[in-house]
Length: 294
Ligand SMILES: NC(=O)c1ccc[n+]([C@@H]2O[C@H](COP(=O)([O-])OP(=O)(O)OC[C@H]3O[C@@H](n4cnc5c(N)ncnc54)[C@H](OP(=O)(O)O)[C@@H]3O)[C@@H](O)[C@H]2O)c1
Image (cartoon, rainbow, N blue to C red; front, top):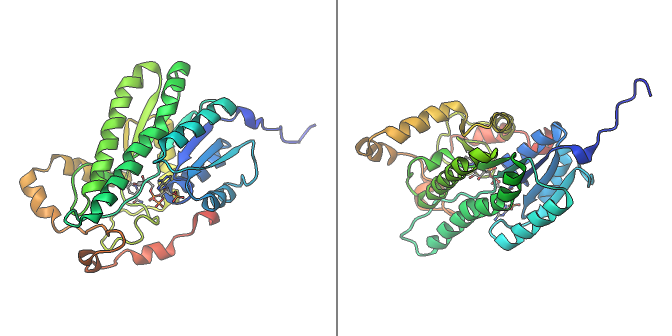
């Protein structure tokens, strides 16, 4: 009919799978891909929070364009079963983003914190590889697709009280690099994205200055741009990339002295040295809109 909008064939729309989509960066990435008309597979443990992301995407109840998966990425068998079901029902996604992550400070002199450290590795490294693994063979066979890992500038060098988080992100960066060189000749792109500071629940408790702090929406727009471009490694914002490059090359003698003054990440649930830190970025967090008002 003249003037009427053509029916969009949602079964032909590209698919993005995003873990950690119930909050923060993952939810903002979901909104960004929804705006572009993609089909979405959103993964996290909390189903009600995933449903909130679905509302923010304007896709609530749209089973042709949306799949919500309540799953703990540490449960690698469950992740594999969900991936197999997706491959069977919808086919292989164009983009898979391993974003789910946790961050706590650890004090290894406290025996309980070893469990926290193991948990951080399980979610941030094992969970990320478990997310990407089921799609390696289908993408390789198809000769296209993009595997994305959300790492961190914290993966570049070790930070005080951050022995587990820094290690988990360093491990992820290396694993993604390994995959990247392995899959490049087969047409599959592997993109590593290292956020600087993004105002989410993860950073809300930080009691130290967070330079170049971005909203999740600002971050997501730039991240999708980097994914589109197939960037091998992107630090967002770029200013933190400069800092990352500097951190990478600064000699240990200087680094060790300087970084001792850096703010400590809070332990789970809290620790003495953290309580002594000023809460300079609290104001910024209060100003940010929740994701469902985007
Ligand atoms: N915010 C920053 O400044 C910053 C900086 C550098 C890197 N990053 C990285 O960016 C990613 C997203 O962080 P964010 O700031 O958006 O954090 P966030 O707001 O705390 O969100 C974390 C997300 O991960 C999910 N998640 C946590 N554990 C999970 C598990 N075991 N299984 C499945 N999902 C799980 C959470 O959902 P459920 O609780 O519902 O499971 C939530 O959706 C993380 O990998 C983080 O390390 C963030």
